[in-house]
Image (cartoon, rainbow, N blue to C red; front, side):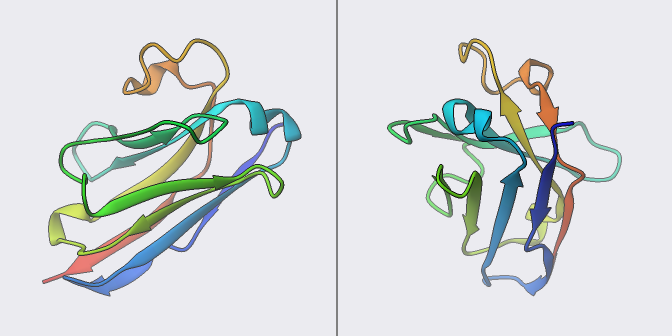
Amino acid sequence: QVQLVESGGGLVQAGGSLRLSCVASERTFSRSLMGWFRQAPGKEREFVAAITWRADSSYYADSVKGRFTISRDNVKNTVYLQMNSLKPDDTSVYYCAVLVGSISRIRRSDEYDYWGQGTQVTVSS
């Protein structure tokens, strides 16, 4: 069974940084687009960032552009999310996900095929 395991979440003060990691259990994902989403209590899951399997293209939500960086290591089947200049509004559970098929609608959570269990990020003011 496919598994995605996130790590790296925690509590940080506003202005601080965190680096999230997501390890995929199957090498198949080295040829798939991988993304990060987040969901705060009472809100819908929202797109944060995504990266193509060759890492030749990356995509970001406007709210994180310039502060977050997505990267991947296909040898390690791992995708990363470097989060800098964190704000209280970034507080959410962060999920990694894999999109196996068409990448035409990468900002839609229902396009993704596999999900991790999530890691909590809390930014204090």
